[in-house]
Image 1: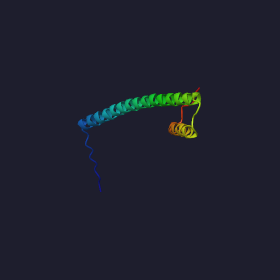
Image 2 (image 1 turned 180 degrees about the horizontal axis):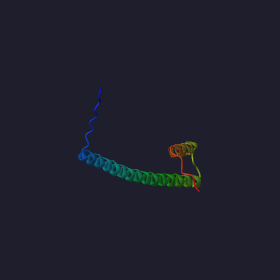
Image 3 (image 1 turned 45 degrees about the vertical axis):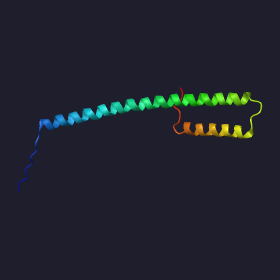
Image 4 (image 1 turned 60 degrees about the horizontal axis):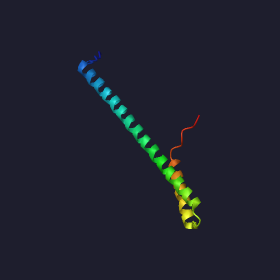
Length: 94
């Protein structure tokens, strides 16, 4: 009993594979760029939110008659913002 294998090699198929691989690489490059843009946007938003909270804290400290409800609401806001910040740990500083 003889078994014969026939392998068809078409250079056109190789060209299509290389073209698809290049497309995948390009799409990943564009995806990486979009991810970096989102990271930058998130960092900017984080800085703006932290600044607003610091400003609110300064205003509360300067106020003479802050009610316990206002202080509790401010403390709850700080806790929520910290919870959002804790979703992704900060990069270690060197």
